Amino acid sequence: MNDVLLLDKYDVALLTALQQDASATHQQLGEQIHLSASQVSRRIARMQAGGVIRRTVALLDPARIGLGVRAISYVTLTRHGDDESAAFEREIITFPEVLECVAVTGESDYILQIVAASLADLSESVLRRLTRIPCVNNIRSNIVLRSIKSSTELPLGQLDQG
Image (cartoon, rainbow, N blue to C red):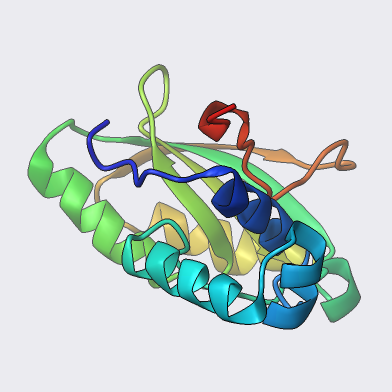
């Protein structure tokens, strides 16, 4: 991968700290990783410009805002061509309930992570709309009963320059 930005141990420590609490001030981060606030600021700006830090967001608890149902859906298209894939992808990005859509190999063409307020909402508004996309052949869904692990933190061990 030639798109990998070279990072030192302070960058890795900073990324680790940011993944745990992106709302920390530069001063707090600096105290944690033993750099000045201005050095932290410059490093963050460099990693943002280099695409390492894509954006900073607040992570919401879906159940606490009324989205207590989560499903993993496997979508198969009618044909495997660029036109069908492009049409599906254009359509799926308009679904706010779809948190993630990945193109995969294997039995399905896409895997979706979906949230909904209820099973009825999932069935009636999300899955029914999915079946109306012309190139969709089959949808198989699993309802999440409980989450064993859910993380947004990426492992950074491969960056260790030690």
